[in-house]
Image (cartoon, rainbow, N blue to C red; front, side, top):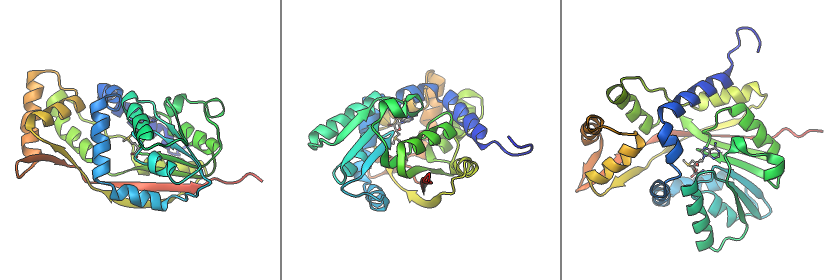
Length: 280
Ligand SMILES: C[S@@+](CC[C@H](N)C(=O)[O-])C[C@H]1O[C@@H](n2cnc3c(N)ncnc32)[C@H](O)[C@@H]1O
């Protein structure tokens, strides 16, 4: 590394590691849990406008072969499979993967296969049947070394790479920033955002297109008990003291309208895409 030059991949690694260690249990359990996967799926079905816009901006053709990394329950993989020749979904979390496979069966989709590995553990040559015309990683960049991850995406792609990520502090991180000093006596470190990602790409000689867009949704609960269960697992609440802190916080933060309780979770997201340089 050139003297005085910022190593953006190190910054990514540090912020991702800090976020993973603060959220240890959440990281292990969040998408493995059936309830969380189902809640995510329901929410994406309710707020489907954004998915529609994403499908319109992807250069899909009936001949395309698409790789969807961290596919979740198939918010993108499933409608993409209905439009293209083949989709490979990479999904390491059991809860998400089971829901994806149920959704695939329910919709009668036969051109989607699923690889159950984390991207960083996957071997592009051995585990995939590439190359893919379009490689997508949508809100699934929880990867320790983003430069390695991007190199593998380029290896797997014959043309396009589309990443979707966060700009600015997400609403759930704002809650963590507010709660951490009271729950754990420490400050919360937020995960790496699109500024770090852009700089890593730039240093790799990749100059991507970037487009910022809002993503608005609510997390709805039928009772305060249901809300507490959800947030207790999100913030790894273990003691009655922590539970009281969380309860008081949520009572003020959640929105109560016509007897229903919801978390308004508006955030700013970004699409980062480029065409792979062709080797002559
Ligand atoms: C918020 S969901 C997004 C799902 C889907 N891509 C979408 O946009 O609706 C994040 C997904 O990324 C997956 N994921 C997180 N880290 C990953 C990694 N290192 N490798 C592969 N998938 C990962 C999670 O298991 C989860 O299903």
